[in-house]
Length: 195
Image (cartoon, rainbow, N blue to C red):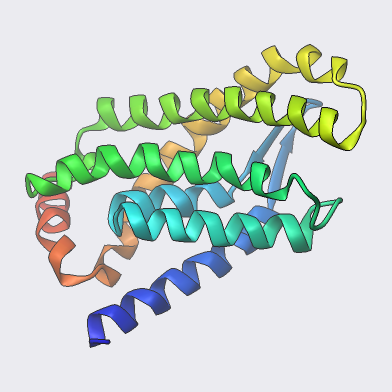
């Protein structure tokens, strides 16, 4: 293993830890809106580090979150609950990779950046609803509640996605010096565009 691989694995490990810590910090606004800050780590990883780093951070971080910090711990449906976070990393990571291949950064293209984050949130809301339904069937609790919350889930996910997208931009710019060398060209052009 080279120095870059070790450095990247260490950075991924730090981001998994940060994902767990920020996942515990939730901002509650009113009755229905709860903003989880762990998503910021996934967005930064997908944009800055790349698709596979983001997927690894999402999978490991959410698995640990489900096992250690959820109310239910390790259950037969735990892998289902990991899936939405991984899908978010995949969606944002694929779009970011397309820009990075051109030597550009997704963050620099604000409209597409926000569309990507909001689109991923819509997909995740649908996936969460389906998983909640399956979880109810598998674990034996009433599933009618799942459908009653669908509209609220979609609305709050979009509000949360906007807040996360806004918070991610300055954080992404602040940590860009930690990026591996191959990503620095796109980040340098992003930083000069910000000035």
